[in-house]
Image (spheres, rainbow, N blue to C red):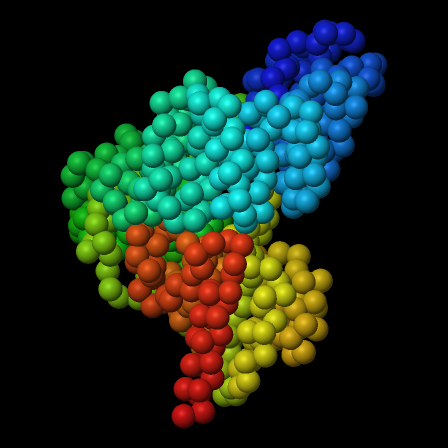
Length: 527
């Protein structure tokens, strides 16, 4: 989603030199230094609205959402006419999941400022992130009516339509927004969204080329890569070359895109060499799964305002003298050559190989009882537009009452309260794998998913792990998840079943399908 960000061009009062230093530091990417400077300026001039607005905007960037909401509210108190404060406060509230408060704030503001397109846009974004895309479109339509060149509102309407699976209309909106965009970062965000829409439509050849927008220097979220050799291009001959592949984005992306690596290895041939730079938690698993590759951990730090990813220990294959890297590629770029159409996805299940001894350990722990189902109900990040992508916890309780099944917790992160709540609602005991850190011991997680009879998951890293290991998998998801690539399944994981709904405000179809899947598993165990 695109909203308005407060612009800090200079203070109107207060300690201008300290404030100006904070602005310079923030523009240079030194967010900690900027925060310190703004805080110093705030102490000297506690009611300067420009300093407060700078603090609020930076707090949002630093994911200090409670502070951002409080600071924007203070700006609004001091300067009610500054509507960026209302917009900023609503943005912080929806990032916190406090959608009703954000909606009330915006509706109150619209009573006195019905002509303000930015407020209609913000209301539409809030409702979309609350899973009410159909309602949101009404308000986004009004924003566009008031300002037909409002690129953010046009884009956000497209995103709401994307949520509803209205892909042709969403494509029209993204194209129109791209023509209207004046800010480079905004144009880059729209280009990336358009790429995922193309993939969601199954237009893989065009979509993978467009997906390179994720690396655009114009997009603030894009990472910078540092790697030896020349950047790989799809037309490059690979036979006999030394290719370094650097994993990117989140853990689930690393696991999913790794499905192309067997094809890459074949293309390099016996005289070629493959080096992989992956999440440190995946080094052992990838080393076992791709034994001819040299696998090391990637490193991530900051280069100004951006993440920088590098491969500090990239080298040649094992038991061979190190050789220079000829080419390097971000892992998410490889499908441009190796997955240009659905027929290029292999039908075999599983390309990662968990430790057999650990699989045996978890199989012994589970024993020979009734079928065991692993469950995971959310991602580790719930801010903003992620939250609506996961069914509410109470919707899981009826599934866990399926007779003849045992349920095992696979939810990573701090989930003790949710787990206790879910077990109480369902009236069952949810098994917890002893001694297993579900977030950091990914070797153990991989082995456990293979030992289970089924993993029932939302679209998160655990689902990707089970899918990549070839484990039985059912994924609860929304109407237009781009990773399904225009199909009703998951081409990356041929054994996976997609359990989908048509709208994020009604999870009943997906949960009913999950209940049917669990019932079938229970019945098969008694047959």
